[in-house]
Image (cartoon, rainbow, N blue to C red; front, side, top):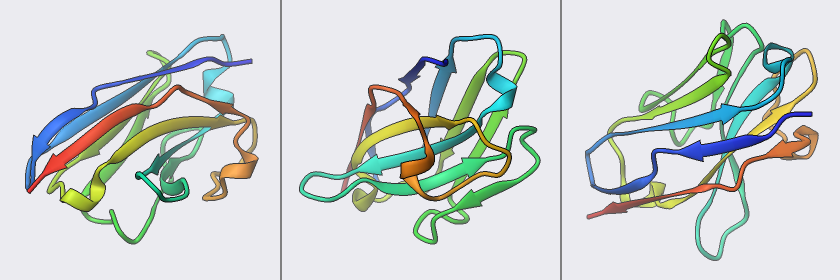
Length: 124
């Protein structure tokens, strides 16, 4: 099993940057593909980004492509989401998730482990 704890959220002005971190417990972090999802008020949770077990392959939602970068450090058991050029519509609770599988996925149902979420608020 793996437990996930996100950090790094906060309040930022439009155009600013934040870096989210997700620290994992357990000895087999490198066996999990990792994903970031977000849920805005009144909306369903949606896919943001995912990264392969090695970190070599990444996938992004169209809405964040070119602005967000997902990465991982398996030695530190941590996955990151660097968010640049933030927009008010990026305001949401951001969750990291882990899935014990070979290939990354954009589908939240395949992720069996979730963090508690961290709030990101972008002011205009």
